[in-house]
Length: 265
Ligand SMILES: Nc1ncnc2c1ncn2[C@@H]1O[C@H](COP(=O)(O)OP(=O)(O)OP(=O)(O)O)[C@@H](O)[C@H]1O
Ligand SMILES: [Mg+2]
Image 1: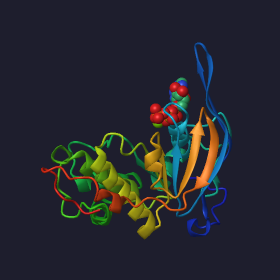
Image 2: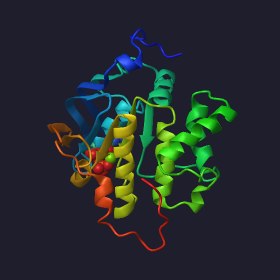
Image 3: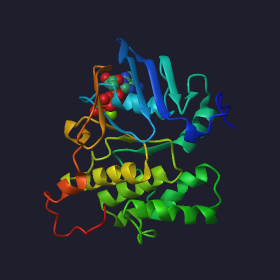
Image 4: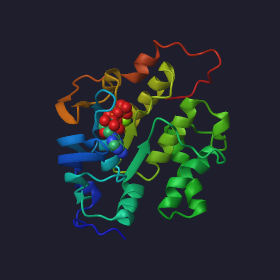
């Protein structure tokens, strides 16, 4: 079991999902140290939809990896639902990652030999849910991303957008503290990208799912509720977006390709 230094706090009562304080990440290369993150500080509260934006190579994915328990900072503090990740070992980080983090990446990373439902069940298997129950619990998240009725579809028979929908279902099935989406539309065309943004907006609005979206594209950030600009490893600005764009409305202005199947968003 993970040793929770604040386990008397139930997740429902902890409003601050992420707290990053003075986080530094250095890499040692042959030529000398590379500064990935230079003392960044930010917070994400429950129910927020925050984007981390900045040019390529300037520290977005490193932030995602540290918050997602895949990497460790050189110095500074990272708390997830009030739990400091600093002193935790690989097994403890893996347990937290499986239970509290939902990842969505540019590459959908579905298992090619498994159906949509089986791909979602993988997340449940990681936290010890038995096979029968896992199948039952995979249904709702697939519905939430517009893939109801496609539980048995294989990835080879899905569009990129459909594969990303399944990847999102896999990310939310364990009701994580936060969904970390790193360039989730990077491999998709304009319409599919907008469909994915519409799904994120709906999951945030209707289900209260906390989302951190890392992207180099400032236009994507307009669909979130707050934008944190990272440049050269430092935070340049952290500002609320008063009126986020509505992806469902913007979808109306992007023509569907004639061969595309209409999937609900
Ligand atoms: N394992 C590593 N070893 C050395 N340098 C690294 C390593 N990982 C990242 N970096 C460096 O840290 C910097 C930030 O990397 P990061 O992947 O966070 O960028 P990013 O903002 O996500 O970029 P992109 O938009 O291309 O995804 C880059 O200069 C990168 O080369
Ligand atoms: Mg990146």
